[in-house]
Length: 320
Ligand SMILES: NC(=O)c1ccc[n+]([C@@H]2O[C@H](COP(=O)([O-])OP(=O)(O)OC[C@H]3O[C@@H](n4cnc5c(N)ncnc54)[C@H](OP(=O)(O)O)[C@@H]3O)[C@@H](O)[C@H]2O)c1
Image (cartoon, rainbow, N blue to C red):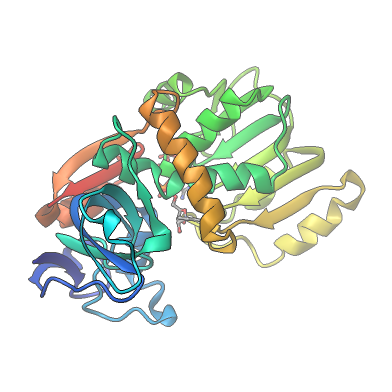
């Protein structure tokens, strides 16, 4: 089968098309003939080599979420799965392929009306959006800021906060055009990347969901209202300054909270319950899946170049 592997860590050109044997599902796994493969921000981080210390080696096949049809199952898996259209998480790799294996606990049936492309756009990121808001104890009436809102996690976070009755949903983004697209998803105030603009934006926020981190994180922390909660779900802007902890303690009398959130800390069954709900909502048109572009699998280099150029709004999807 055709797969995309990392031949050399670094830029997108280090990705290459390779031929690999079609895998056989091990005990507890299903084999999925892929129809759609999500291109996640984390794929670009792994490709860059930044996570080499976590055991990734050259030759690693990247990609973590696919959708398609189950064609075989391993020992201990109900054969009724065969022939079903599903979304599946392949973990930390193994997704950019024509035939992927996934643990059956990490597989969700697709409702009628939800395409494979929509499923890989929402399946992983929607769960992060949901639990990030829960981790921040979001409640109706809260003023919310989503920093880095134009990515796959952000576009769903904006929709969920708006639908659940946020007082305001401010967003940061790099252009007015992207801001207009975010308004269509429920954003009420559009700020630039440094948090300026958005004339009548709230002076403070109860909840900040942050995909960026980096050197500006302390300045955004300052925007929390008393009892406010900031939750970081990504570090696409790099790590925060080393003295950020001192900043958090310095705001002691405002009772502010800072937390990181990773979906890895949520039980598979709980993730699945939320994903099933979101897939059903998307199939009814209640959650919009934001597909930037669909490209053939063998154009994975181009997909990663577009990610690097910062032009992606939502998610790029590959098709075998
Ligand atoms: N917590 C979890 O469980 C979990 C799960 C999966 C992935 N992740 C993490 O989430 C991140 C990817 O999320 P994603 O796919 O939604 O994001 P993304 O598409 O990589 O980026 C989101 C947006 O942030 C803005 N941005 C990019 N670089 C920036 C910078 N230096 N400063 C300010 N804004 C910047 C860009 O929009 P504008 O150009 O419009 O500003 C971009 O579209 C990765 O760090 C990944 O590891 C976390």
